Length: 253
Image (cartoon, rainbow, N blue to C red; front, side, top):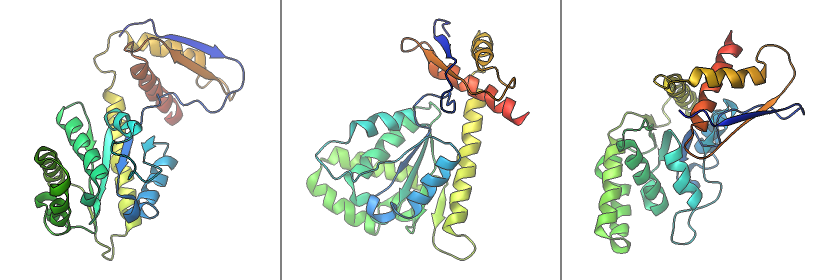
């Protein structure tokens, strides 16, 4: 990694330091009317409390004809995808567009992970586009090209055979318990990602040392902030994650 990403410090007491960049770690995909104010909100709140940067659409997407630019950017930038597949998920072209992009990123082999939640829907219906999913695609066939419909079906087929969580409302496996399981799995994956991020990078330890020295980790209770800046592609994100690992280690020590 180039060493020209510069670091600067400020003595003015700032808000709490957040070293990783603004990219999201988790992207939640769901059909708003189905779970926005229930399961999706519960899951988002749990992830936020764990300080996991999570993207969810705050407004209904049934506007215009193109997917929002923020969604287009946030999907490839995120590392973990959580599609909440409900009975009417496939009725939304926006949900299907999101899912297709998730699967495309996952297939690129760059470390993206999909953790599907089958919310009161049979995974077989998702996998084979049966039941409510078949009905949804009968409508899509009249509005969209065969190629687009094929891509959506292939995305559902891929996700439908992935290991995930099946929310059925059965006793002993409450929605709250499933949210806790999802959170635990996400945290486990993120720890692995951050641990491996610097394995083969030459010179990263020197840069991490410079930034942590500016932060004075462990020396006092005084708050400080460090800005990492530079041209695109210099490794600011990687350095931020490496410093984050160091901060975590100091906190746990």
